[in-house]
Image 1 (cartoon, rainbow, N blue to C red):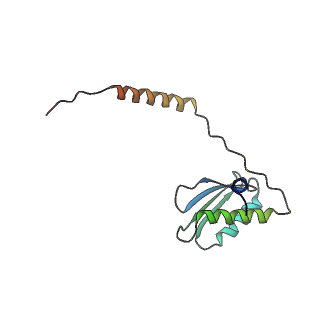
Image 2: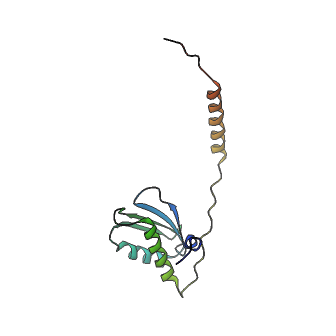
Image 3: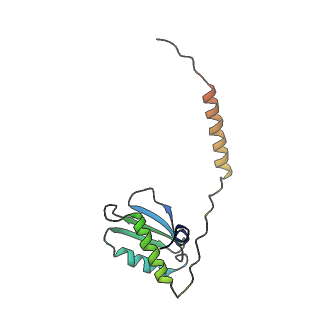
Length: 132
């Protein structure tokens, strides 16, 4: 059994908030059309999986599945087994790098400042209540 730290070095969920849809970072998929074909073929044959799209340009895998038949955690475990099984003896898996959060652009920073200043002005403004 693999601990969570090693699991996250092989497969990491990027987006899983929508039920029945999960996007994963997969070690070994980046620049590997072979891994793309093998993952898509293996997962597409599983009952309850509707769509599998592997992208070797980004190293990400998108899976759309039936939540009544498949549990996301088990799906991730199966993908880890596929990845480890496909790379054993052939090449070493590079662990996934931590992705940095994108920095705010100058425009986004200006917009955020403007919104905060408007909200501050609104909070300071207390309209008088006129009794009816």
